[in-house]
Length: 272
Image: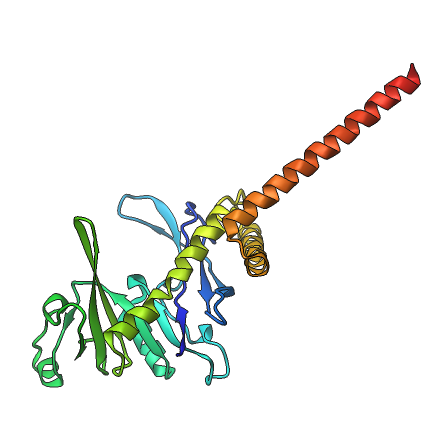
């Protein structure tokens, strides 16, 4: 089974200033999900939005896929890219397909597809919601792409509520079960996202310049990598490890405080 590569995500920093946007790349390897690269997108261009407020933006969109994200040389163990709806645009699909890699991406339900090449040439497109049933796969054509893609539909039911997920990929030989299983591995990115915000203070940078922000982000990422190593070694998750470290740090601090108190009392006795 080819190992999937979840596409980058952008955690929200809560800051709207120059240099506040970045990408983190994840490559799944040997069952672990470490961050393999960080791309900082500098917000150097100042503009005015519709409300008349001045903001900064980068020179390229954060939803853009870059060929430099892929490990070299091309014959790599990472061959499948799993991405959420934010990255499911024609530009990214063309980029990945042009690198002879495969992608599986969540697709919005408003996308229109053609059921055959003839329908595409004739401009006959229908909604993806009407193109297939639950648990089935179908080869379709998209207006912005020159190659066909495979789509499938997955329905989640929890109590009285239900949700629908549409997946699209360029490997036409996959089944519904294979597509959903590979895409499910992308959830490790969300777990990483949760851990890096909760355990290593990723969003709590007090800085206001680009260099200091980068240093804080990199230190936070390295701390999460160390937590991942401890997780593999001791079999505990990041939150349990953080609680254990905080507990031991508190015990050590109290022991040091008691030692200082005893030293102070001894000095007082000697002085008397």
